[in-house]
Amino acid sequence: MIRIGHTRASGTLVFGTTRHDGTDAVIGSASGGWRYSRLIGDEGAWYLPHSRYGRPRLPDIERLAAALRAAGHTVEVTITSSSNATAAIEADRAVRAAGRAARYTELADARISSATARLAAVDARREAVPPGQPVINDRYAGFLNRLNRAEDAARAQLATGHYWQRRAEATSSTQRYRHNPRVTVGRVERLEAEQRRLQRRRDGLDPTGERSGAYFADLAEMDVALADLTDEIGYWRGELAALETAGVFRSWTRDDFRPGDEARVLNVWYPVVRVNTKTLTVELPNRDGGHESNNEVTRRRTDTAPYVNVYGRRRDGRELLSPPPAEGATCTCRITIPTFNAEFIPERDGGPCPKPPVSRLTIRHDGASCGCDGTCMLPEPDEPDVSPEQEWTEVVLFCTDHAFEFQADIAAAVATEAATVEDLS
Ligand SMILES: [Zn+2]
Ligand SMILES: [Zn+2]
Image (cartoon, rainbow, N blue to C red; front, side):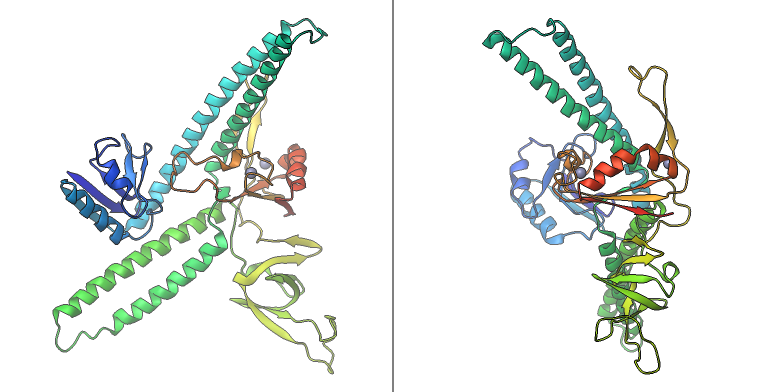
């Protein structure tokens, strides 16, 4: 029997089939773009891309069930769409982060050890050539070319290894995000408005009079919808909280501003006149373009902007494009302990750095302009449904020591123009 199951934490999966038992033609051509991943479960499974954490896409599920039944299979559909799934999702997130770190470390180790062995072999063959030997014939030139190509390939593999190593280090601290946090903030606000609207409708359902079956059906349906919404809001709030704890992102709030600051509202900087709970009151330029005045003759022209439209703060000559990290955020680097024989054993890992951050590096990765040579766009081994071409953002916080240690890397990142560095001190 084939079971099509949906839960919020795992998305929509097809159980009871294997890749090559004849169902693949049916599932592969069904609507919705079902895909197969070897990484799901012990033996792999078909899944519906982008179905995790969402509501079940019933039309696609029903159509697949019908197609499989038409092909002579017994199909059961189980949909667990709601209710208290948030806690499970949270747990799932932690488990996945741990699993990812382990997997990235494996990927890194395999590549680094293979590349190191290949480089050693290239070196050994080079050393066998007497120094200064002229390129006397085509065969010898071909040998040198092959050696150079082998070295390039080994160095590329080493770079990929180092990339996975950095990713393994960053998984626990959510330094990387694909969802734009501002979009997430907007989504939470929309979902909360929807929740209030539904709650009002539910409260307004008339419980008196003739209690028809429809009344109870409506009530039950609305309760499921409300529970779903609560779950969804909880999930996205959890995402934002994780980013905030890691010092990566939080929304601007009234605590971040005081009169006299300048605020960038969308694309223009304005002086802040008053700080309100949900908005900033900013001063508009005079008609002749200046900001001064406020004497009795000319009245100030002001406007208010919600915090979601604020894109920066200038204070004491320092400019921040997103709010400073939350209180208690730490440097996101790792402490490395040098070993005596760095040639054979690279430095030892001393755990995350506990010092407060003094600067923030934000890199927008697209694989090209960020200078990663494409390594940053390698597909996620455990997120087969996330498009590898999607840009993502990385935020790194440096304490004084690590800012000094990595100053060359920071300068190189900023030189690519895909990165910005901000002073948090
Ligand atoms: Zn990159
Ligand atoms: Zn540090």
